[in-house]
Length: 339
Ligand code: GRG
Image (cartoon, rainbow, N blue to C red; front, top):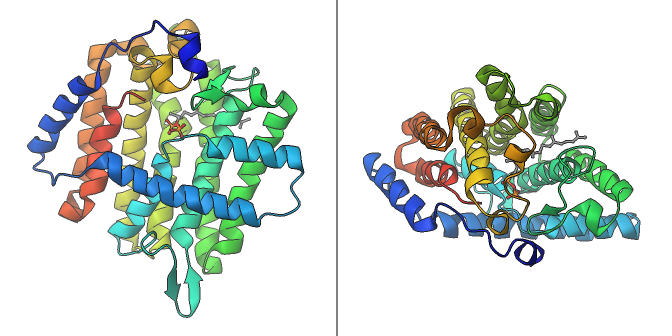
């Protein structure tokens, strides 16, 4: 609503029909089983949203203003892609995370994948809340609403991010069905979100400008800022389902590749989608002189690159055949997305 009133005249250069046609051609090329990815993603978003709501309802002792801000940012309409990857990777290696939501194992309730899915969405949401702050990317809109620091204030936004990050680890520590599994999950998440992962990506992204920085630097930023969190999502699902080392390795590689493609697509849609489609201010990368794929390669070549990366992600899943149909479809649809 806010975005529409601010940018009434902006139109996307690429419409859904165009991207859908391209996507279907690619899916045919891979002889992929047809999957309604929008519906499948919505089901997983519902599952993780339900879990987040339940976790928040049980949490006591949070000051009202902070609780309101946490509710505000978590209730905003995120795509929940990272959560879906956790749940689908868990299912792929034999887990049953979401249907039914609770799986009894050895008499204990086992809800590991869904808790991990909620945890990674909390870490991701914290990164967006902090990224929107004036000291960082300085954006007044997120997920179609005023950013946390606009709806509340800067101090509350900083503390909301801090709270979400901490809550994620508490959830995994307190709710995971075994100590060994919990430690493995926390290590994976901490490495992805930490100073040699997402925070490294953010530091380098803030410093990099499109003025002679190399493609290697850009690649490094995308891997750290975004792809490592996707790899962590895949691994959390695999760990939840007690996957073997080979399966974990394959899914980690898939997650990293998908995350890279996702970020290249993010660079592209910043140029080609409207603020209304994105739910945040479009066109900011170029305005801020950011180092992005379109800045280095132009839009056409960037689109080709995104597609190649998605194909690589699909190839990585070949050992799983049709069982991985939904993850393959996700890879192709995410690089062709408009939001
Ligand atoms: C450590 C102080 C401090 C801040 C962290 C790391 C960081 C700030 C910000 C990085 C966040 C960022 C903009 C990452 C890029 C990844 C990306 C494409 C985010 C958008 O993800 P979507 O499209 O968003 O999945 P939704 O809203 O759908 O969840």
